[in-house]
Length: 254
Picture 1 (tube, helix red, strand yellow):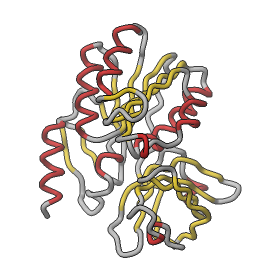
Picture 2 (cartoon, rainbow, N blue to C red; picture 1 turned 180 degrees about the vertical axis):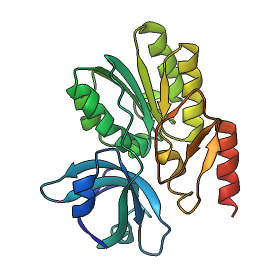
Picture 3 (cartoon, rainbow, N blue to C red; picture 1 turned 135 degrees about the vertical axis):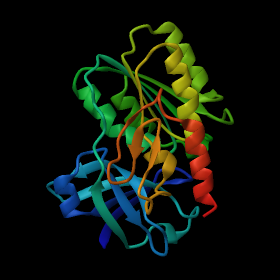
């Protein structure tokens, strides 16, 4: 069991939790995953956003179990980790990040790495509406260009992320790497865009799977095996997204 030190409501759906986790903080790198079990719930994988090794704490972002419900912030939770591998961080001078929902929190360690190493960083952050927007100040601090989209147009650019991505790729010729973290539909659509412009692309599946396969031994797509004991970024141009969506649909009915 881990004590929750602080719980910050970020938006109408998201909650940042800082917890005591001395052993995990000592071993993990930002971007590693942990398996979290809330009271009465199943284990769910979350990306570690921040680590304070001296204090023995880690921070991650989760969806609130219900808006305004104090049950969303219990005093203690079960946490295991770190699991999997930290993010893939190949050297590059210009990269673009595409993220939505929980993926916003998951990309922060990657943004820090590339910004600290002098890379030019472009970020496209997608949200459902103005009410679900969070951590724009952090994204702005860690990026050279920041674009925000909302599905309903209540903030930023209205419409899907891929439209903004396509426009950027048409005007910026030297993007060396793309990272996408979001729903399966988002990863599929935006990987199609980057393939058109021949930009090497990596996708991280934690935000899409949300721990639903925590008890499964793993699965294979286009020759790449994925399970929660070896979380890794995959080549976004090789993932069988249709097969992944079918697999998730089957998982949901079990």
